[in-house]
Length: 108
Image (tube, rainbow, N blue to C red; front, side):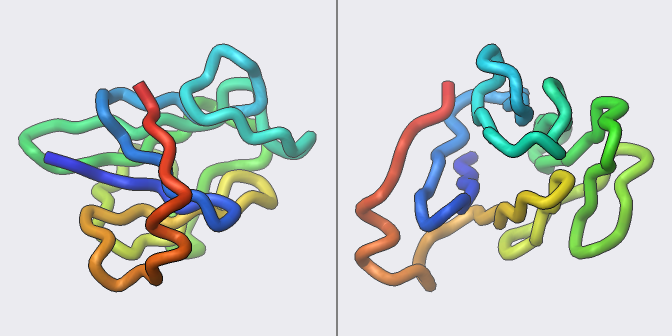
């Protein structure tokens, strides 16, 4: 089961989960925005469904503009907001343009 995060015109492939997101360098996806907490959120899989979970961040984690207070199921095209940073979650890349598809990195 594959999943991807689009961030700043780059695609990150989620090769293993959980994936930690935050400002600290020990995260899988480092977001260098001061409003993002050191360990802000994570994406994990349970029963073949991807979930987003806030890790007690200071400025909150939002899924499609709704604050995440407990693990929330993700679907392709969902908008994830961590503080001021916007990411998009995908399970396929068919609708993205070829230029964006070539800017892919792996998150392990």
